[in-house]
Amino acid sequence: KTYRVAILGATGAVGTEFLELLASRQFPLADLKLLASPRSAGRTIQFAGENLPVEAVSEDVFNNVDIVLASAGASTSRIWASKAMASGAVVIDNSSAFRMEPNVPLVVPEVNPQAAFTHQGIIANPNCTTILMAVVVWPLHQLEPIQRLVAATYQSASGAGARAMEEMKAQAQAILQGEPAKTEIFPYPLAFNLFPHNSKLNELGYCEEEMKMVNETRKIFANPEMRITATCVRVPVLRAHSEAINLEFGRPFPVEKAREILSQSPGVKLVEDWQANYFPMPIEASGKDDVLVGRIRQDISNPNGLELWLSGDQIRKGAALNAVQIAELLVKENSLVTPELAISGKK
Ligand code: A2P
Image: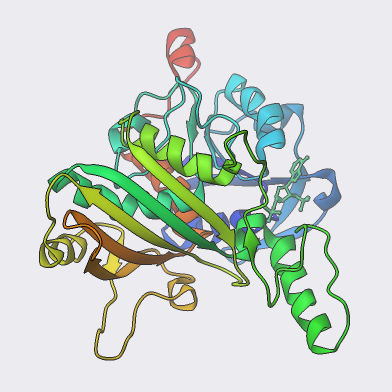
């Protein structure tokens, strides 16, 4: 069986990765539609040796589409997801628009694949830093429940999209030539700098990105009380996010046991050479499917604590790959019929 797929946001950083993954993972495609804003209509993009046209997203464009992979921002998803569903497609949405809606599953295939099959037409792909963290800490949490998690993130420009990556490169060039760095996407220069994540702050002083890590992890782990805190920082890295994570358990968690578990966990690769001081780095995580984890050590301030460090490709596992894995799950379990359509018998 093959499927008709549309990519909403096909010209963006994540959209580009969707194309690469559909080809390299040999997704069973019957048809592929590339959708973006009217700005991009008329462009063509190469896919599997063919030049495919980019269409402006519109009312009737989702007719005859089975799966929409959306990564065009929350406001675009809010407008188009319901229209795509109404025409019979299942939407896998990378934006934050529907993630916390109770009837929308929030899925990391290595953690809660079963949640995907409860969908009612939309499945949300979690926030990138949340996905990378979830894949790594879930297998440890399975052996010994995490009592408290403290994260600090080192997030690349790619998280803010393709134009943000270009902006940082241009800033680096300008600064090296002794010129002022121009800012348009980011509020401050990112090249040769860093700043706390610039998403909206709440009354407690946490930014949206930090609250996504808290609330989305709780939802994915089905553990609404889980104690999590985070500080999110944008760093001058082009692609791939890193995170320092402190975990507290109810009793000591042997470091050797954590290493053993993480060296066998799906989607995770243990990268540690203590002699060479060699651990996960964003340039090595870039373009890889696995989240790299290492520097696992006992927290010297807490007998029940573990410290670890990870780097993962934000565009790949943090976004496009996770969404494509969800699509593969639906295909494998034949879960592409929405309840409403099952009733009306349209498919
Ligand atoms: P476009 O290139 O036409 O602006 P990124 O996250 O890398 O910035 O990419 C965002 C993606 O979302 C791009 O493909 C972009 O298309 C698309 N997009 C942005 N705004 C809209 C919109 N209003 N309607 C449809 N697609 C949009």
